Length: 415
Image (cartoon, rainbow, N blue to C red; front, side, top):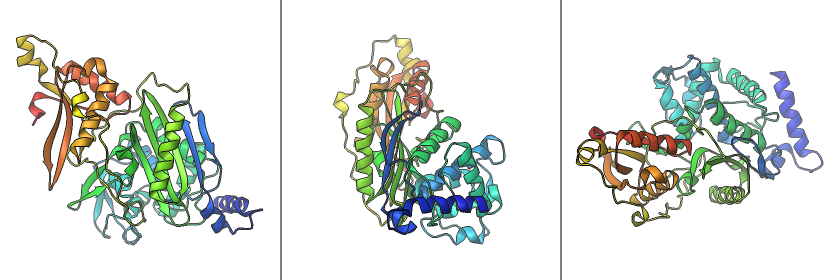
């Protein structure tokens, strides 16, 4: 405990020395960014990436890393119910509104952290794994050192303000890569746009995911001291990049900066093309996984720009290939679903991107954006149909490799 306190104090002191600012002022003034190749770790862009900053709710990425560790080794299960303490109930917003004495399912806690950035759910996980949040924070710091995060010190599981809780953009690029590498099975949770809790649809704070091609996570963060933070990952042409932006002036300017940095980095040559799967498949296309908008941690609500359909349905090949009568009657009734969205335009775009990633399998498939009800909400399921089972599963394998969501849809599930 004492060693970690001294480490935090030393890091804070380094920031203020020679600047004439207090530690708090120095940290609040810092902006930093980095973009790396997800597979190789090659640094493509470095903008003061070793500056000492506050992680804010990016902290929850480490909370989730340790929760995924526990799922892997059997200390937790997704269906397990965890107790909610009075301390968890007392957390400041944003939160799920948990009450002491109730229980929270592990998977619900994960989704609460990923989408709503729920501080009360973070404490529930911390207490389940560490006994107390402070002991869990020590576990987080130890894990940070194991992952090569040399300048990160944790004091809580949520990212709520604490001047001793510090990190760097470089450290968070390392953590992002570690989540994909060590917990590929669970990484797709970060792609969830919404989930339903207590009768409410809770939207993901990562607005950029709805308008940047190929982006599928990871996490936003905001406090007054940190500014607007974002760790993000995107895939284009089989190449995955990780970007981290710290200290943005607003959610919009931070998102725009991330988009510009990723565009710049994707335009540079690199040696990070994946020959194997980027991550394991996870079905995020259930009816409660829809696009949406929400607030950015503790920031007042700022509406994101609507998604624009880059390619209309007319651009998607829709003519089925010639096939036998027997195939038409039996084998070609399968399809793939590549997402469920809050607008038809977003569904069209997802279908177009899927065809581009697996053209040889999907070029003869029929594009279909199907309107459906998910509780009180209307969703649009983006599908490509007219496949046999083998091609449907093969298409999903290819799309998953490139970071897309995909689930094979059998004839009985076509409704």
